Image (cartoon, rainbow, N blue to C red; front, side):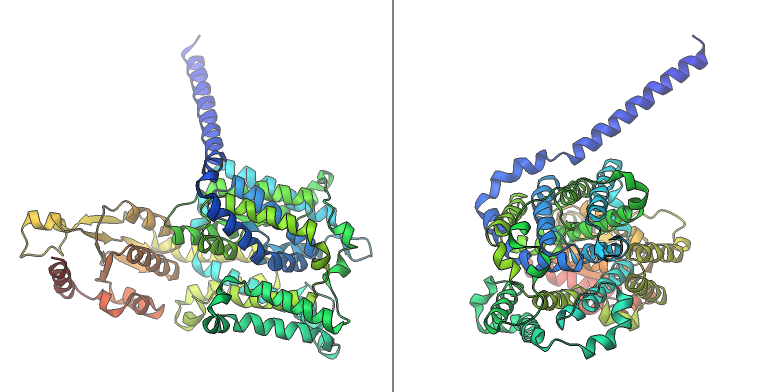
Length: 583
């Protein structure tokens, strides 16, 4: 054998080994074994949390099913698939999956294209085939191990997207709120607004307005009646609205009008994907998959911040892929990890995927045992719940500082918001990311390494202390380097995660060359996380233009002016006083 042939054979063997090693690594990452092992560790707490979250999820699942144009019951089946399958295979131990406002709005937009002939009825086979295919795409993406790139999404893009979704949800529920047929096309809602005002069904307002008042006044009622804290506001609005409609015998639309009969709604139907229309379904499925990953992993980041843990992005993507495949097969709305349910799960004591599974099983028991009650719910009541969801989903972190944002961040936010509402959700995200990328690519010419500096080796070291005393002080000096923007958030978090144990953190901003909204909020979240662990945090030495940005986005106000210092000399007395009081 010639040397060339030998080298070719050796190279081929290496390629095969690398390929199989990659496949083996991917399979280990997406394996549900870790989730299965954790199931018995918190049985009591998880069962209580799962049942409670299911009660909260019921009205939302019905409402999101309505907004998706697939029907309220499809919303429940989506929550069942997300809860059971997503919980079993997901990468966030406390995540709870189901239909979400962004996903429901997205599939609702697609359903305007996929209708049966001239009947204007949704093509359910097409819808559930797209949902199944989106799940298949997510499984493939999880195997490629690229889900972690979600961390590089600029914050103005996320904020514009969420505010756009909130506007879509509010506008598309106007007709249902006043007792008319729901219109999920934003252009039709706006163009027919005059007709809507002239044809209001006053009886629907007897349900919609009290339900909305309950939702808005619930926090006030909780302060006066603390026992109400254990009762979900959407469930209360659902019960009050349904009872009102029943007692007054109102002539308004009900969920049962779209269910095709009580018995039919309780029967599980299987929808076999129609792969003969693959080319027709591919683009919508890719858009669904992209949004599901974005929606899910952002919710997982929220859960990480609350539990001080770290989710597996690739396994979460795999779990959501499996959940969407299941939803497509059983006629459920497309799913994603839902922030509201996940936060509720954590607050009610859920710690393992068992809580998510119990949530799914509870909803299944409801749909089989209480279908007649579900059919009696007025659609105006669901519209009121969705009104509140739309208002809550607006990004109230960015709205108060809009006028003070850097021009580029404001442009990105505005473009994404506008395109989300008037065109397409995924197009909006793509435009925003590209726009933000070209703004910052010129700022990043080299790779910056954020540093954890021992206190004794920093220029904050107290001169009156000996080297031995300095080395014993539990102080860490964290020194971010270069530009802090959406592309440097993950390295920033990872660098601080490697810091030694400490009781005081000094964030030295002297080497930060540029900061945007994403960077400021990431640094703020890092600091808040440290303070939650009883670490005293001091920030100092920001350049004047960096400080100006921090002031505009309320970073210094949120941190507290007594924790921010312009120079080394103003920090040193605070450090000395702190350790004198400790000793």
